[in-house]
Image (cartoon, rainbow, N blue to C red; front, side, top):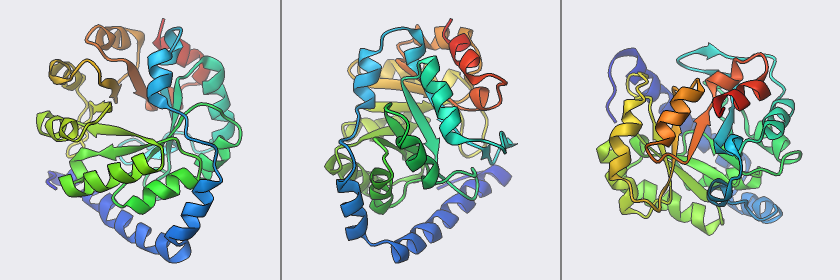
Amino acid sequence: MKGSGKQGNMLEEILAHKRVEVREAKELRSVGTLEEEAGRMDPPRSLIQRITDAQGPAHRILAEIKRASPSKGVLREDLDPVDWAGRYVRAGAVGLSILTDEKFFKGSLADLAGIREHVDLPLLRKDFLIDPYQVLEARASGADAVLLIMRILDDGLFADLLKKVREAGMEALVEVHDEADLERALAQGTRLLGINNRDLSRFKVDLAVTRRLMPRIPSDVVVVSASGIHGPEQVRSLESEGVKAFLVGEALMTATDPEEKLRELVT
């Protein structure tokens, strides 16, 4: 993986820590234990179906819960994830994206599990997945879908993760940023595609990324645009390009009233 300067080094640091984190997690809970825990969960909810069947404008928003990010620092230190999730539900979000990375985003699998007990919407585990073990972790914590980032995965590992996702009855939101990512994702039958307008190597955000890639995507693929979406004019513009849903994090997490902000995005 290539990066440039401080930001590129940050991504490498995140992945290096993630490898250690996964190794330590395997020592605490075996695959067999996770499979038993996952088997006790209710069947996964389909994010694709919820987006496809959505009625009303607010149902286009996949609302994110995160305390911090490497590029922006702490967004909301006193966050109550369950309370925040409830606000998103009341505002009509189509699903919730839960940051579970602890070191860099201040999240946890406990956030995901806690929200699952109170929310019936599809839940996405958003993290840096590099091992099929993490897919089982997600299912055992109540996730219905996971994020797979093409930029950090080679074709073999992507295939292994996708296989585990499908075996668990879950869905993968496959994140791409450029034409090379997109070609690799589509080659393996991606049905739910996330276009990240943020370059993970430089953390620069440009909504033109979505506009550039949309003509290359088959019409039966459900597209979610992510990063840099702060107002209704951006939602309307990208929707006219064929985007079906929008993953919004920072704009909601920094809002005084996240319900009002979510509704504002789709007016």
